[in-house]
Amino acid sequence: MKTSDWKQEFREALTGWYREEKRDLPWRHTRNPYHIWISEVMLQQTRVDTVIPYYARFTERFSDMKELAYAPEEELMKMWEGLGYYSRARNLQSSVREAYETYGEVPADPEKFGKLKGVGPYTEGAVMSIAYGIPAPAVDGNVMRVLSRILLIEEDIAKPKTRRLFEEAVMELIDREDPSSFNQGMMELGAVICTPRRPKCLLCPVRDFCGAYHEGREEELPVKSKKKKQQSFPQTVIALRDPEGRWLMEQRPEEGLLAGMWQFPTAETADPEEAVRIISGRHRLTVGPIEEAVRFRHVFTHRIWEVTAYAASVPDRGTPADRSGWFRPEEFDMLTLPNPTKKVRAALGL
DNA sequence: AACTCGTGGGA
DNA sequence: TTCCCAAGAGT
View (cartoon, helix red, strand yellow):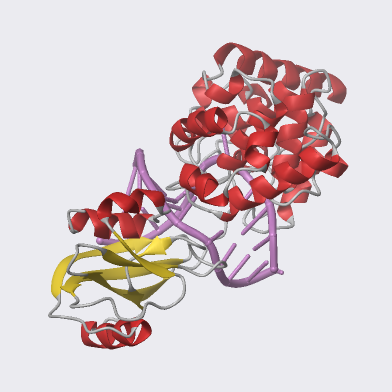
């Protein structure tokens, strides 16, 4: 068998399987490049089942580029609330605005599209191939896992430079008649068959082409170095209620973790007395006796919060610092609240 | 290159 | 519980 024939048979086996067996997902019902762009950004580091309801709401509210381009940021963040990695939403909006004003559409040019904020190598290839049929590589974690097994590639896929190796491999293999089905087929295969643990090789449409399967090494690949575990940080929350039933909320800084989101007053200490001193000083107010409401751990990718939340009354509102305000529980829904804050809110029965 | 940036699910 | 992870990108 000649090498070129092997590649062609691989392509046909993969795209044929994909066209027959692909899951019925919302973004596979549209050819709207803008909607496909939205789906790819939402799917960055996020599971399909999590994205589905967000995608439905988001594309309904911001049905075309103009709607999103000029939407109020608060509304944008409210639609993204709970999905995580919030800079994705802000970058998406600014890039949709730029594309709309510059091209009037999603540019069908990888060079132009890839320059937009929030569009990295993966998203560039995914949107260009799926929306426009352009043969560009869309290398995500699935593709690196699948190809490392098929081609017996032993480079560490945790290392940034390794991705380029896989992009070159994809360009050698990609189906130029249907780059969309090829790229999505690779990812679909990784998602449902060629899984990280216990891959279902007996159901695999391309196992005849798989080096790892032939050598019985499918569980050994890919090679991936582990990341170091996260550091823990104490977070003491002092939820403060005024005599009229309003609660003090603070808005986090515009940059960094949970940027711009709202939370109950919080101090980075394990000592509740110290937290009261810090927060009462910050807002120039007097805090009554505190009562513990809830204690939990919140795990981020790179750090862990050990949260202890207390509630207390204040006789008057003092002098609130910048980026803070008093709100009734019904008004909380106007604010963008990160999950840790939602947990505290639930514990307080608000 | 290494670090930052969320969340929820599964083994 | 603990760990890894899931269609990554910005700095």
